[in-house]
Figure 1: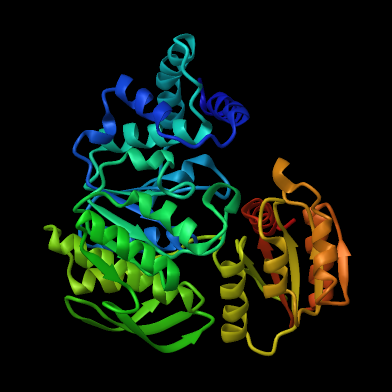
Figure 2: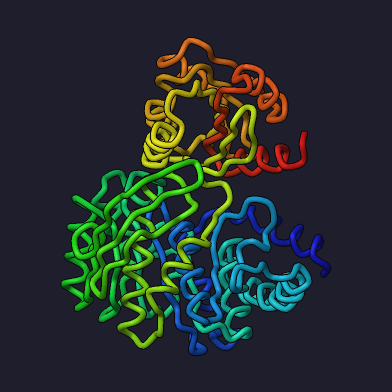
Amino acid sequence: MNFEEAMDYLRGLAKFGINLGLGRIEELLRRLGDPHRSGLKIVHIGGTNGKGSTTVMLSEVLREAGYRVGAFTSPHLHSYTERYMINGTQIEPAKIAALLTELRPYLDAMVAEGYEHPTEFEVGTTLAFLYFSREKVDYLLLEVGLGGAIDSTNVAPSMLAVITNVAMDHMDYLGHTIKDIAAVKAGIIKPGTPVVTAATGAGLQVIEKVCGEKGCRLTRVGQDITWEPISHSVGGQHFSVTGQKGLYQDLTIKLLGRHQQANAATAIGTAENLIEAGAVISAEAIRRGLATAFIPGRLEIVGHKPLTIIDGAHNYEGARSLKLALADHFPGRDVVLVIGMLADKERARVVEGLVPGAKAVIVTRPDSPRSGDWRHLAELAGRYAANISLMEDVGEALKKAKNLAGPEGLLCVTGSIYLVAEARGKIRAGK
């Protein structure tokens, strides 16, 4: 298969849906010689929000320390190759094609022998283990896909677990209380393995209990590691972190939003645990790595006149962080929202967190079969703002939003990652 054929094949696996459990991927990996057990040093990163940002920050810190760092993340914005990075460079499309061509006979054999077909994400995770083990990365940063306990990444024999936070999301799969969701996320904690978390409240209580039962050293961001804001601007943020191994003064990150300071402290806590395990990471490597870190689609400025920002705030905590960041970094600007969300998300709570105070709201349709009744979002938004529009075409929605915002206003595109990806592509292409 070439790359396009491989992507068509992979997209075809979406028909198997989300089918949680570890049996299928364990069997597939066994047939491939268990590449996930080939000596990879795996840092397993879960949590409701902040996984991607923490992964990018830690990757940059380790790269500055001289290591070869693999990162497996999901979803992607524009190309499937974004999911597989080594030192910030995407996998080559030809390698994706070759690996999927290699995997396909194993998948066909499993089905022929009566096994359920592995899902799209299970195949993608298997591909990650094959790729990074063969590339002999020094560290693999492995991001959880959904939840933790029975997510396909949880076959990994990790050396360290990170749970960024616990909030309400994916309730149909993970549970309807913070404690239920935290219990699923804590499923990535292995006996005796150090854990870093920025969770608070009931979520932290669950994680503390699991760590106690499994004999794991726990680093609590916000207690064992703290941070102090210094200043912020459109160009980024300055703050200091007091870690367990030192004081990191006047750090800089390009990423916007107070929540990114918590993510940076989480990355530092993780780096300090890796130092405890033998890694050589200087304070200067931490400083340079954090200053370099960038993740597209996270409070990213993609245009001016009007100032245009995209952010994948797809749950209430993300929406709350976005609203706070807009007030912090761009006070006094009239905000026009372009928003679209999937049907299985907390639409009402996200709207409640974002829409009040907006000059205008344009509801559009994310390019996903999970969009459902996308127009219902307009009814919800109408409770908090008077100027509500419905435009199914994302390009047309962006044009109208620019006119409404005017050159001095602020246009914010948010909600589903599918919408953010499409809007980002159109804006960058000048459409």
